[in-house]
Image 1 (cartoon, one colour):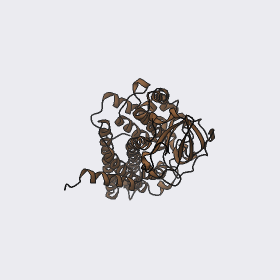
Image 2: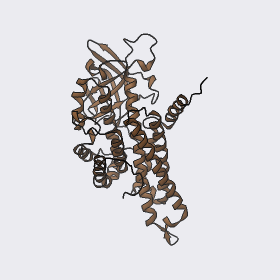
Image 3: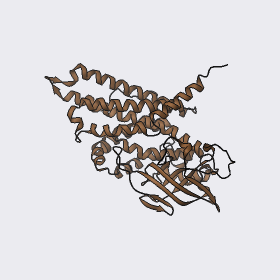
Length: 402
């Protein structure tokens, strides 16, 4: 059911072909099974295999490494389509994509040649890890440590909220590496990203590394969200991203910037699906002798929902295009993420209200969306963090002289 909303002007034939292929896949392979899998909290193995075959895991990986070499815009629009089907599936791709992006931008030649072809094929699956039990967005407070020891680094600490913690086989982990940095070095200049390879699964997945099990969540099910515990985990020095310590904070911030465009795209996709469900139900349900779509109260809701869907999509596309053109997009990405996630929650809630009592029934898809939307308010930095970033950047841009 694709209508007028959230169209993107100026796409190439290749982009349009990729998106229509993904949309078909979503309609045939994801939407029919999403709610059932979600209620069982089951990992969508078949869906993931299908996405591997479509090449989605290598969408932005350069062609020389076996990827499709596409833009952030193509990727974001793909995510929007997938999230329209089931948001959890876009989460399975997103962390993989952020790690691939960090490798492409910052990895050594050897790291790129080793990881990227396998990542493009979906053989190696990525996850990345900043948060800890006591902190989320306050990255400078990280306590996990990496200590140099005979050509290796020994990592110790506890990480939290790893999307794909169990199913991934490569985790980019942010740790403090204070050695080699003079006393009084600010925390963000003494952090390093380590590329940690592991077995998929739970428990001790390699000596010194434990993935305890899935965290039970309100929504965003099917994708495994975990802790990660490092206790004397040895990582060779050639697995320091980019080959030099002290750059980890910048690597992660670069990754999160594209991740924010991705979360905006997810908000857009979920909001579009909620609108589709609302507009369709409003034409089927009758009260007082006519479809509820003919009541002005409902038409006003649909008008607001559609306007929000359109606005969020436009901002997300703008943020992606800005990054693709080589410009800094932190302001646009922050605004897009903030707006799309807030609007998503509102559009989902309006669709839920249109459904009346049925919205509360697990038989209706809107019940699932209602539990999924809140994750977007928190993932990749809360609304409050986005507003802080936006506010600071605005003051830099509009500083008064004198």
